[in-house]
Image (tube, rainbow, N blue to C red; front, side):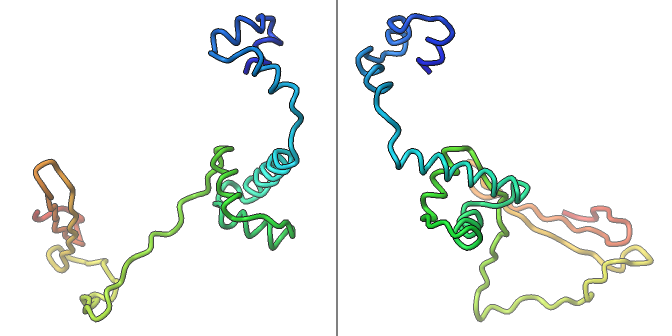
Length: 155
């Protein structure tokens, strides 16, 4: 940031004083060469961007890691890919929601065989229930819907 301000014509002394950086530390940082680790991370970040763009922005760090290691033959840790993606602001789409199944618990049978279309009112009612946390506790909301008219008949 100081380098950009200096390029714009602001004196180094003023930039360092405003940002709270010692002038000596600025010049010391400016003189130090880029380490091989920093170069590799910049190179990997570029590759990660390419893989992410090629996936139309859908891949997360696991798939990007798989593409780098299996597809391109680059040896890299998945944690490194995750950190570099986070630092670069690259995120994939959220994955599928996994439903916890309870073993031994019987679920309701499908009595309508997934056929919800009806020819007359009051032939089939369907319901759903949800819960919401409030300051006082949980609130449970349920609605009963007529499959023919798609109107709420009870709650």
